[in-house]
Length: 318
Length: 281
Ligand SMILES: [Fe+2]
Image (cartoon, rainbow over all chains, first blue to last red; front, side, top):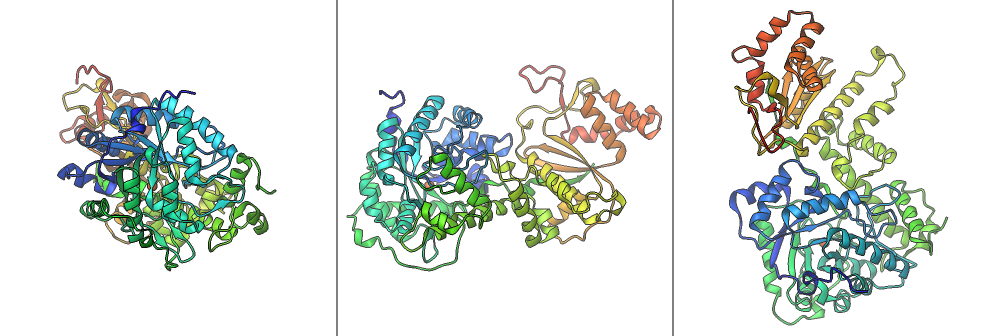
């Protein structure tokens, strides 16, 4: 079946360079300094319902920088019906900020009307693949653009799974024309937890369909690794990025920093480190998976999406 | 019920249930559904999701109710919030919705709910009031407002004045706005004694102002919000407080009176100014 949205966006996506997440705590800095950063990624849910300052900020940012919209609530793998009210608001936001693309995760976020605010893993089976293919098609028809789908970080796999994640995403992309977002840190995290080889994961990934990559920091908890987005990118992930950069032919790269967010300058300096890994031979021996140890952490932090409202409130005598 | 090999819907229902009610899923059932990882068994893998589920949304609850969290202390607040989230798991894709039902939940589940008002625990009343106020402040942050469009100036006729969209009124049994702003300043205020308080919340230039109101101001603004008419508002104050309407009219119009101050604070827009063509503004 010919797919209406197998467009240039996913077969030859623009190389946006090195970008940063658009975060509430950096709004003032960005609006006053207009820093020289290549592009921004905005969390769709942080802006799509906004009638206040976030919406005002993203409009201004979108006038000066390339912006992409990254969602955490599409729930493309859920067995609940797709939420068309959500999709409608996403489409309105997209009409306003004209994102280079719109992405979300290969996951489900809730079922039976509940929302976990987490990116939950799917059983990777033929049944799930068929289900997700159908839903990606509906979403792309509705949004009138290809969707970019990201590999999530996962802490469990289901006994019933029969398809590897790279194969699942490749077949999804083949069937729907969707593009892919390769989160290099998620590859490392999921592979460490599952006991598989992250370099082999990337070798098997449909890198020619990758529009964008993610980098982030994680927390080693000894027996497992948690994707915390609250610290610098680990050396092993940078090494893996060297391979991913080459395989994706230099896809747009974005640093996610969502907990203990440092200054804008520090975040920017961190993503610029990527330049060091754009050359040189990839040596799988440099991607180590040490046992490590550390405190337990919370995966997929979302509290950065909750604005510190107290700071923009004042008391006056009337 | 085992979810192993079950259709997607059954598997997801099973896992969602395991997140909201951790400890209720038998371990051997988990082991059938979840593969063991390199270093952990299925139950331990699932536990990572179970732990993170509550920690993640509880942190958001603390951030949406910082003053109540301060009042109760983090531990007690978290206990209340956990019970709330267990009774009302999040339904919306947006985290902004997370605390919407919290004030109502606190009121419904108070242990002295059936006692006469005079015999209820005062600190629970305070807690519910503060939660209600904080929820309102939170909603104001991102609600549709009037920024970027003209506000009403002093020269606008009364019959053209309309309350702006990002505006809210509240009546409380405790001085919750005072308490909230003390916490904001970094102070550690005492639980205030019972004292009726009235507030208006108004957002202008993306800053939410809390204005303490007198009872007559509150009656005036409530009537104005309901009727859209300044004359109705004046009559309502006169009737409810048994004062001559002319006295009310005078304090409305006085030099540095409420009309002038509220216009300055951004309470009002002109009739029709939400639309493209603005007349008489
Ligand atoms: Fe990511």
